[in-house]
Length: 518
Image 1: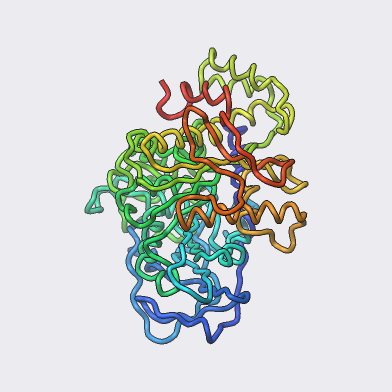
Image 2: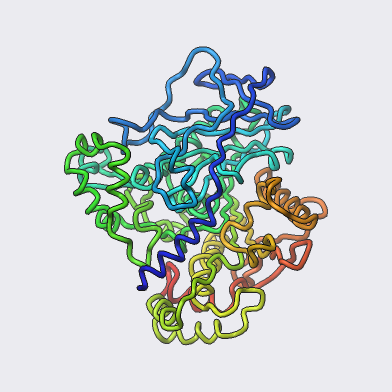
């Protein structure tokens, strides 16, 4: 029953983090022609002053002999290549809400998209990593285009990367054939390949290759943290921004042994030889993944995701952050006020959940805290409040404390504003404010004003490493002893400074359930 409850909560996270796959095809524009290292592209002008180049290959299709291999450079082409439609999403399981992405998904999916100002050069570059628990999602999601951010004077890059079994599968047979004696983390290698493409080519689109910010939401934010500790990504970005995901909470990275154990039954079903594994069809591989045993509740979403391999990830990322071995770059990080929403958990289930994570003594303290009126949070669900604290809010505070302690500029926020239909702010509620409200989504003038403020903070950070400018409400650097953060409050038009993020519950969790607890 505990596994089922965890699964339901996790599926709700995944559902909220995914928006509809929206295949867009623009009319080619004669003015949107650019030459890259690999060849010439013709993009589109979807709005005045904005150019879009969609479906650009950044690596060879990872199919056939290249399945479960590091991404390979895409060869150059002759002539003018159309870049007016998204490439295919990566192959993925169907979860109901991602059916469109799953239906269009293929293994030939390593494409990226560039949204850029029509004029100027040396614009700051923002590279967005989509969410979906590294299991689902697409760069063509409704809420990840550049129509709102590009007018702020930045270049936006989005891309697809291998997911699920195609992106993170580990087996002894694949380890043995690898010159580095490792497997897995192919999805992270794809992300690094996309950043390498940006470094080579983004100047041709008006971007500054020396001023790249990586940012992501949910799993994309977790992956942002993983790239911060990967030696292979060092020097490919100068800032990082994490929305509702980090290395200390949800989707914790597995050790090599844990990853091998997690994938053991799948490896057995696909065969013991790499050639046999690679001869299976896409559907057969997805079926093998789907038939795998359910993950344990303590690491439901990270169980078959990224793992320590000694190459992409030299150690557990939380350990590397604690030791100050992450990229020495400014970090903006935060979460939403109630990432996990209630799912009719019984008091016994909630008690079991909390005690399993922190022990009986600390559980009693937390239950006392969660028995108090939750203010603007949904009533009557201590389990959801606990999981929001453990996997998001308090984990954000932990990562911010590590990063700031090493002298790196760190800015923390909590988002507490949402559309009337989904109060309070849940997982992914901030995305509409970051990327702009689609015309189909009802929103108020106040919502538009908050969106404008967030977009200005985000793009300021991408340009300079400091979110502040002009008349914006003050946002100071994070100090661990104060726990200070910027609060995007539901009842206020402007964000306000606040302190002691997470309060007593984070104090308890930092010594019991979070990485580094003792």
